[in-house]
Structures are given as C-alpha cells and as structure tokens.
Image (cartoon, rainbow, N blue to C red; front, side, top):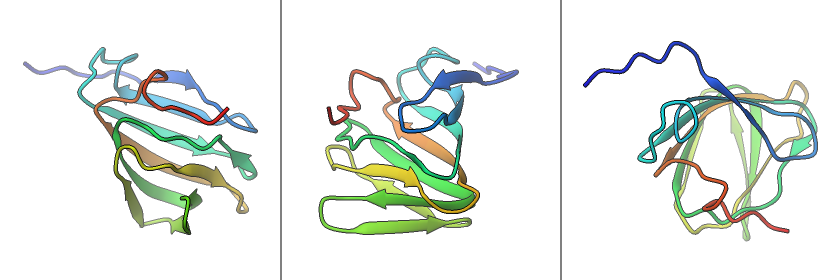
Length: 120
C-alpha cells in the first residue's frame, strides 16, 4: 500500500506559549498508531510540562535550539543535532533561546495524549 500525505494536520500543543505542531503521520492525520512524525515550531520562551511517555521519541533540531531536561541533566540540542529519549524516561522540553526552535519529532508507537503522562 502507498499513501500520499497532501498536508499535515495542525495539532494543539501544551505549554506556556502557542507552539505549532504539524502532524504528517500519526493518530490524527494518517490514522496510524504505529508511528507519529511531526514538524514542530516552538517560540522563544515556550515550555511544556514534564512527561514520562510510553513511547520512544526521536527529535532532530532543524533550526534554533531545544532544551531537554531530565531528572539528572539538561541537554541543549542545536540545529543539526538530535536526541533520543527512551520510553518511560521523564523529560521536559522547552525553547528558551532567541528565535525558538524548529524540529522534527518521531514517536514509536505514535504520540497519544493518553500515553504521554504529563506532569500535573
């Protein structure tokens, strides 16, 4: 089977500022739960609650810089760099730097509000 994706679905994001999520593959746009692939645009000063998801997440920063905070350390992922976060690891993402960040996020299995387990 071959499936052409003509355009992404815009998904409402959680966080302190409005972040744009363009889902190409996932539960909303392609109706698949095996994988989600989305293009993210997070503005300068955006921060989301911490989470402990039931999925592996692969993130590739295309522009700007993204901060990923774990229980023990912080990573600054700059354009051209990537980070892998294994399922059941606590993580908090933000884009505190000038210009924000643009990045691709891939989740296996697909992202779901029921399996992300965000902090209260």
